[in-house]
Amino acid sequence: MLSKILLASGLIGTVFLAGCTPTPETTESTVGSETAQTTSDSVAEPDAMEGEDVMMAEADREITVDMFMFGYSEEEIMVTPGETIKVNLTNSEGMHDFDVDELGVDGDVIAEGETTSVILTIPEDAQAGTEYAYYCSVGNHREQGMEGTIIVE
Image (cartoon, rainbow, N blue to C red; front, side, top):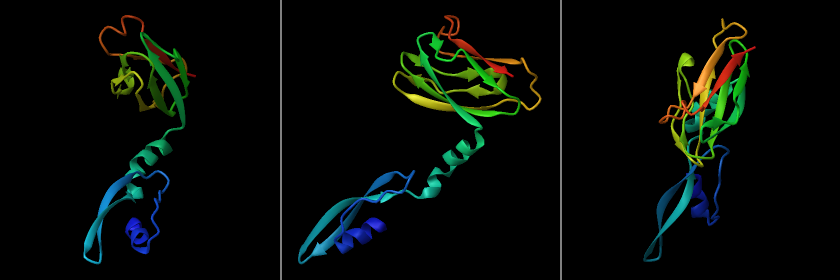
């Protein structure tokens, strides 16, 4: 709607709201006997991003872990009982994922250069010293040593 107002008023420009993705919009205008089509950017509704914002609000902290052939940049992740963490995963080599069976985490398989995230919550009653294995389920990567440990402090 805003793009139509700007277009109609002769103020041609693009307006973006934080966190919104522009989508092309085609409008027609008539000047004299000629009809012109103009493509402009409109702004996605802010509530389309609410799910992601809610997910971020639920995480107590974020960490970044890089995946590469047969390893993770973090071999141990220290956590506390009841903590929710968002693990931002990057992949610098091969095809990998991030799974934690005991916590119900089944991460997406991503290719080199891609990123994804998983959210995991440590049980409130987890005792200090409890360990959860995380690993790559692609092929024989786990058997090749692609695993790490989440340790409750």
